[in-house]
Length: 220
Image (cartoon, rainbow, N blue to C red; front, side, top):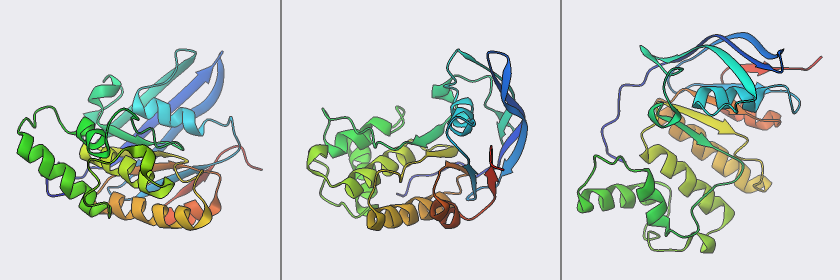
């Protein structure tokens, strides 16, 4: 994709804490993730990994109490609503819209300021070319394989021009071969676009592929 992107900036977490019913789930957590690098969070279910991603994205459920600063460069994200944080996230499920074509799913992520129909189509076609799906714009997402759907989901996230990429076990439902291929595809793109990335996983192979620091919560 050839669109102009903002200068890559580091993600910083300063004193991030999350409490549930008064008990600390995450306590004064600090971290810095450089552009293009990945911080991996590992640990048993319920230790706060995905909760931290929710805090970063601004989607922490009301039952939790969160505090602490999250910045990207000089931009503080914590006071901003989710739609203004420019945080991209991939989940276990690709979450493609079934009522939209593949191209329609990608168009959904394009900035609203991009009004030219021809330019929007160029961006969509370039994204499909980049993920090996040239000519698939008019396809129904239901006709795609699991690996193809996952690649479309990533390209949709990148077309939104995020400042940060969050990965909540996005490789978990793919078989071993597709998992390895998609994992490489994701991390190559995160590095190419200079995105500070935070990965939540239970799989040691994911952490190895991500490179960067690994933090283990709730493990002996």
